[in-house]
Every structure is written in structure tokens, then in C-alpha cells.
Length: 315
Image 1 (cartoon, rainbow, N blue to C red):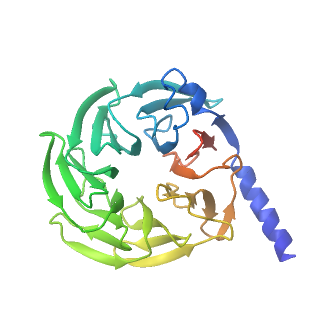
Image 2: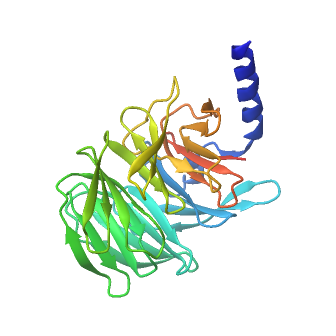
């Protein structure tokens, strides 16, 4: 009886997530841009909503593409392509105030583009290894973390590094706690979360190796960890509030993303978890490792990107 109820509940939840459109092959969409060497190396590493109707995708083809969702039929149209990276684009972030798009890359650099005119504004170079993550702290400051075990703060106006710190462990991800406030959190290979303030003082939280961090409201931090669970932390108390797991859930890779929906009704990490019921919803068509997920700012619509050049828009 309990099993039947659970199955019915999961079926109802699945029906709410209707597949609106699927870019079956960014392979085909990118055909005019790929050369022979890149054709088999086109994973999409990150997707990011820039508004309720526009999103960006970046990956191993060294480019960032801007897409628009045409309503009401939700057709996805590629609007433009941003170039400048010499290797894979690993991470994207966007500042709506300045209309600048940030891209971390495996070429040891961070690029900054203007979304309105598609121009490359600047390149932040200074890391000596792959840049795993880069984030806006404010419209004028950017933080980046790299496999060289350095965290750097960059000034957008002067285009220079204004602070550099060596935490001593590979940085897997960085997230700002709150826009406009010079505090952020970094996840490291040494099984620690580091909470940084404006003076670069840190408070360490022992955890399993953290792959990815996501903060939505300045209070709650969602972490994807190596033990195939998601942990929700209260950053005010540095305490774990909930741990989410599922029987078949496996963390894809150290590139895998996790996200919270705008109203914190759901979190997603390859699978989608319902917070109140602690049940998961399996989204079809994602047969390969899911690298990135991003919720539409409206709360209606989820983007997913996987290893086989596929981006899905769920609604």
C-alpha cells in the first residue's frame, strides 16, 4: 500500500515536469563552428539563465552561446556566440546590473563579456592552472578559484588582481553568499568548506569532499558531496540543516552542479528532490552524466546539460 502511494506521488510529481523542448544535439547547432578535432569533444559544462527568457551555455568547444526561449511554444534559438577562451569554459556567472557575463576556463584565465554587444571586455590572467570557478562578488569585483590552489580577487574597473590567497587545497567551486557583499564560500579537495569575509579571515567546516556549492538567499548553502548526497547548510550557524539522498542517485563528476529553486521548493542535482517529501523525481532523456543545472528565475523551468552535448529545458 505504501509502495503504491509512493509510486502514485512520484508519478504526479513527474507530470508537473513536462519536457518543453530539447536541443537534441548542440552538436548540430554548433556544426558550423566545430572543426574536426572538436566534433567529439563538445560537452556542455555549464548553463545559466540570464533572464526569464535568455540563457547561456559553455563547454569544451571553447565558446559561450547565448540562447533565447521564444514563448509560448518555448523554441530555443541561438542568438549569438561569445569567443575568447583558448580551452574549455568551465563556469559561468552573470551580473544583471552591469550586463556582464563571466566565464572561467581551463586555459588558466577568466573572461568578461558584455551581453548586449557581445564584446569581450577583458581577460583576467594570473592563475597557473585550470580555473574551476569564477563569481561576481559585486558589479566591480570578481573572485576566482583554480587548481593552482589560489583564490584571487579581481577589480573589474582596473582589470587587475587586488588580492590573492593560498588556502593550500585545490578549489572545486566558489559561490558568493550574497550579491554586493564581499563574503563567499569555497569548497576544496581537502574536505573543507571555507567561509571567507572581506578581510580574508576564514571559518572552516569539516565536510566530505565538496564538488559544488549553491547559495540562493544568503542563508542556505546547498552542497554536492562525494558520498552521493546533498547537504543543506545554514551559513549563519555553519550547521547542516538537512541531508538529501536517494537510492539510485550518484554524483556524476567533480563538475556536477546542484541548484535550489527560487522559492526553495526543490533542489536538483541530476535527479530532482522534493524537500517536504524527500522523494526524488527522475527526469527522462538524461542518459549521460549531467554536468549542470539551472532554475529559471521565475521558478518555472529547469535547464540541464549533459556530457553528450545535450541541453534540456524542463517546465
